Amino acid sequence: MSRVCELTGKGPMSGNNVSHANNKSRRRFLPNLNDVSLISDALGQSFSLRISAAALRSVDHRGGLDAFLAKAKDVELSAKALKIKKNIAKSQAA
Image (spheres, rainbow, N blue to C red):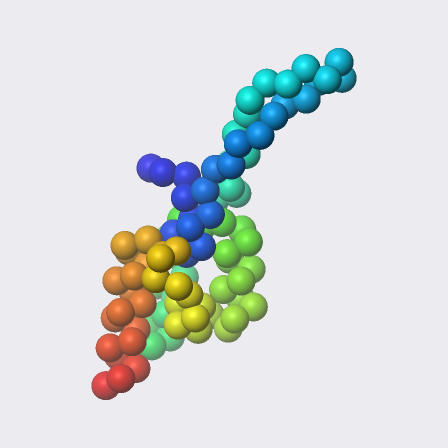
């Protein structure tokens, strides 16, 4: 399972551990990923996604999964999230 947020595309970053003696060694900064179930109002269905805590706050701020995916860029979304976005667009068009 990759350490990448399914909604924002946020992934690991690299940097340095710096000791008191100013010695530097490489380290990784991992995103704070959580397994959550989000409900789509348009589809009336819940989806299990692995997203970052920041993405979860963004989903709440925008007013739910449907509103978040409507504004999200396709490049940042995972294949699973893209499929959900297209299904929501189809249901709202009909």
